[in-house]
Image (cartoon, rainbow, N blue to C red; front, side, top):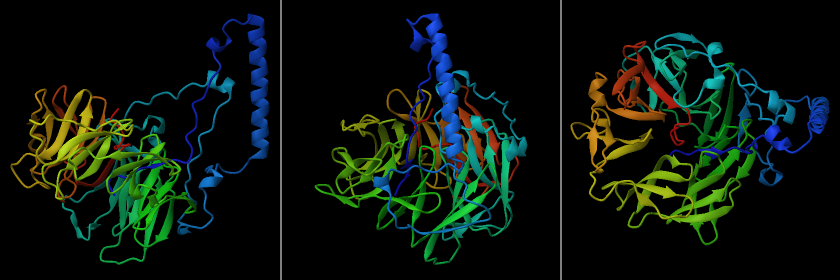
Length: 468
């Protein structure tokens, strides 16, 4: 399943503060009286809530979506599960008086601090979660796992290259960094032991603020992913189907494996706000609500045999690569709306689309990650190409400008900046870099001249969402 994201159980509605506009037309004395009454009611309500609920916040799952049977066995780690607090509505009076936290100056490029110094309210697009090693050569030939011969540092990197040390993982830890939660405060790992045929799959979650860790183990082979938008639960994907589980391992919802008139469904790709889920069928896709009920079916672009998604292009349009045959020949980039409107090609028929891995927008410009045809596709031939007004593409030659023959890959985009990694699959001198198309400036954020060593894994903040 490609790039699966999932939906949170509940998305809080926007607060509705009472401001001057709501009191327009009332006498001044009456306005003052009303404000006083509202403040008293808010204080009383707060006191009632406090006296009646002293337990930790819980995920509030609709009863119709809960199954009483367990999805797997939850195993306690060194500390209790780090379930994030459920966002709460504020009272009208507090909505008026609340002030946003002051912005903290970003730590400069190459500087390092501890996790207690992270300005969590500022973590967002442009920030990166990275696993770094002092070794410059990484062996990734053990069934996809990395053979660790030195300790590794888990770092949060800000948009200009300042870094914050979360923890140090010891030699032989067997943890594969997989995903960054939507709230930015937790990381998801899979326990991967080389050459071991394990009868279970173990999800390991690390709280980046506190260092607390807990595990969830399920039977058989499975893929985990965080729900959207904040990661308040997990989606477990098996050959047998999909189910949503809590961070404590309790089963919350089993998604249908087929629908009348549609047939079998598989996989899942949630909208950034978590309100809808796109699932694969033999003839295209089915769009469902968060609870699995069908909204509509979507057809593949005309003449296309199969497609794979890359990212959300807009809030309601998915960028996909589609192929006319059964093999990955002659790929074409399509924008597929989930509204039921017809899919449209991103490029005209005369454009040289070539073989590519991804497409992303940075500001008003579009960039392709594809082979520059001068070397191997995976390690020393991928580069960034800019889309020209006439539909052709032009290489930016970024792989050579990083001082390596390895390819470069999209990590995320934020505003007018593109964030990239040198190829993490090729095992030597990997780094994280930023590129500003307006000035043609290329800057190393981690690896190479900044701290040296190599990047084993890197995750952009909500990298599958539309760039902001």
